[in-house]
Length: 462
Image (cartoon, rainbow, N blue to C red; front, top):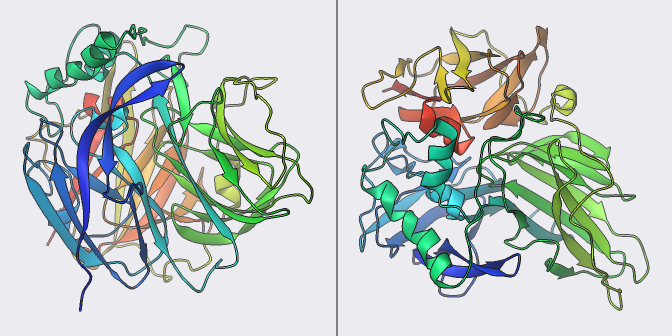
């Protein structure tokens, strides 16, 4: 007999950030566990109940559900209305680290996200699993952040969002105000660093905590850890910084790669990393930092064996981290690459836009409800040749499919299988996927405000 569905409740709650109350969203379960964990080969059976007082819809980032269950308003299904519910039931043919997040308006910025782990019981059973969700946080309401970026304009066509719904997010800020917290403005990045992050955030969170009060994870002396890192931030990329310790990268975006060892690993918005880490022997705490791209600001967690002394950690690294590039991506090799075959279709994708006007687009078309999809045929091998014509990096995410990185700057190789790949300024990245999951699928920059401003498209085939 099939197990009963897992019920996820979309709710409002108050957390503490930098000593001040902050009103955010939650994906709640009755047992208090965040998100969903399932075994590969089982079924994803979930019921989502909307208790936040405004429409919403959840996307299962990295999974390959039927199109109607993918969770993108206007493309794969209607939003869940306040007080309403939706049920999901589809197979989980492959394991890995994924996550769920709202795909409605700006709700993702207000922490409406949670882990989604598909485990293979035969793999890494001897290791302690530690899941880390990264997020960026501002006390300013997301619609105000967007208005500051665009010079006071709201989205012309808010993706999946009633025009009045944007105002509902203002309640989040008002609740914080009522609790005594003063919103700090989020604004365009300063002129010294205009091309790394559009928003000046108040805090960066690892499992919803800053380094002023980090999560302390108890491990064994010399514990063997499987660290699953999920970048669910709206706009911020990070470097995983292990200090003097080393880890082995074994999967990206849930898909196995040939192992790569190191002490630092980049992670763009929407991406995930699986790292195998063996803690040193002795009663010494092991911090795991996540350093903001281009900045010394950081967040983190602490792995603590018995009797370890936990000391206060600075939220600033000794120096700024570099901008993310494709040096690691060029090293990665899929453990099981796509079957060798010639592409049936090459789709040129120019990432276009104007930072000054905060206008973002694909092939110079800013998406709206009337934008036609790219038409494909079932069974095709499709290559997307993405060229970034802008001065900002864009993490590009394809729904409902796994793609393989097959070319960087003209060099062909059997790169990693992913669902989100970074395309830095001026660079060309080619990915390949098979049109084996019919339906209507979103394709967009995973920087939230870029997608809302128009860097969004879709593919359709039946």
